[in-house]
Amino acid sequence: MIMKVRPAEPGLFVVLEGVEGAGKSTHARWLGERLRAAGVPSRVVREPGGTEAGERVRSVVLDPGLQISPEMELLLILAARAEFVRRVVRPALVAGEVVVADRYELSTYAYQGIARDLGLEKVRSLNAFATGGLKPDAVVLLSVDSEVGLGRKRARPDRLEREDREFHRKVAQAYERLAAEEPNVLVVASDAPAEEVRARIVRALAGRFPETFGKIEG
Image 1 (cartoon, rainbow, N blue to C red):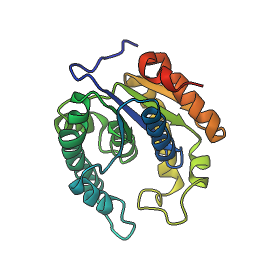
Image 2: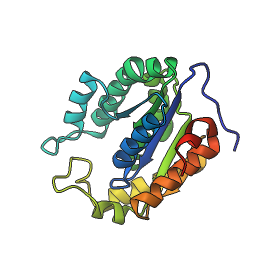
Image 3: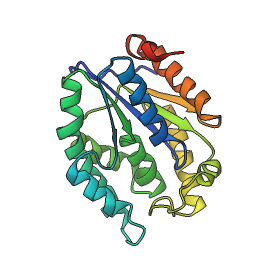
């Protein structure tokens, strides 16, 4: 597959993706810490969220006490993303930082476009409007069986984590499909101890961006 290149900004935009329990948040925080320790300007962000308004949207989207239609869920996430891209990601990239995000557009394609059956192409179009077409330089897809991921769930699961196993199976299958269709996706098996998974993530990224991630190998 021919890789698409994100133009202009001097920074790098890296996203960690995967099913519930894949380890995205934990490994994103670790990656940010290692980059900063190596003297690489970076920030770790999450979606939905990343801004004051976005965090409020996040609390609604993930509130287990609310019933939200798939359409409302999608539009709330995209509204938060538009603010996130404008106020956080683009300025950081212009400043030459490495942005490490816990989720971005691939989650929306998998959860709302495919698993919620809202239509992948429709969701892609709406997402492009929200983001102004901003694509990640690399997406690290942490691959783990959805049943294994669900076994790692928190004691107090959020609204999406509480979905039934069939929904989470659809999400996992959607990610497999998207890994083959979307540019710049690096699949990393997340079925090992944390140290090994972290080494795999760094190797994958260093293979693509040696000048940045080669600094934290080993």
